[in-house]
Amino acid sequence: MLTFTDLSVNVKEKKILNQISFSFELGKNYTILGQNGSWKSSLALAIMGHPNYQVTSGTLELDGENLLWLSPDQRAKRGIFLAFQHIPEIPWVKFFEFLKGIYDVTLEVPTTFLGFKTLIEPLLEELQLSKEFLWRDLNVGFSWGERRKLEILQIMLLKPKYIILDEIDSGLDVDALKTVAEHLAALRSPANTLIIITHRFSMLEVVPPDAVLIMKQWTIVRTGDSSLVEDVKLHGFA
Image (cartoon, rainbow, N blue to C red; front, side, top):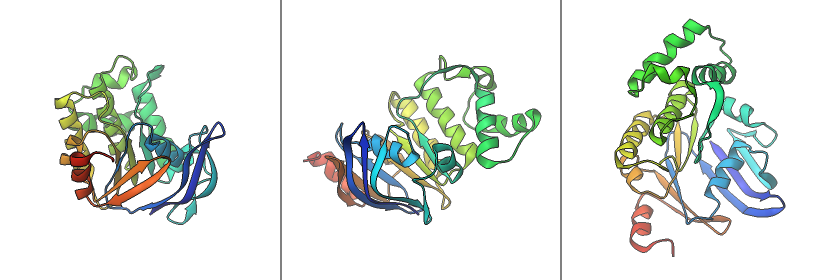
């Protein structure tokens, strides 16, 4: 269980999250909704341990272990994964090198060049991606649909327990959104949890949540089951 209790967070001495509490259970899927500026992405970054987000009070635990003392890479090793809203281009780093690096470090299983190539190529085929992506600079010149698929590839590779998807539908056209949503739905299992931050309800038609959180003015103002999505569709966040 991934739990935060009375969690307050500052950025440059400005309070952005105020005493929020919730628990994400393994094997269930969640959606976080809210207007722009409700600090949904900030919650995701705070959970992942972004250095600009200072936890001023409260607790953050994974299966009883205090995460606040752990760096982002250590949290990743514990099974937390964050797909960014804005995916950066990183020139001079080959995608193959990046994937092999995060696999070897996160799972602490060193691989050979040929061993990892044998491991990763079937995943590319499953996502209908060319093997040529492995030898290109990381995200440089990739479309948003390709970048999203390559994030899913990382999830398939690392098999994290808590998968936070920060507006993974951002930048996608209708067809790409459907494809990404279908791949996410295929990832669902009792061994993981999807935490989807979104503004586009079409994603939730393919990956329906077990629980919904609504954020507003630095905190969680309402929680409920999937019917809460329909309420927001009809009435907005008022």
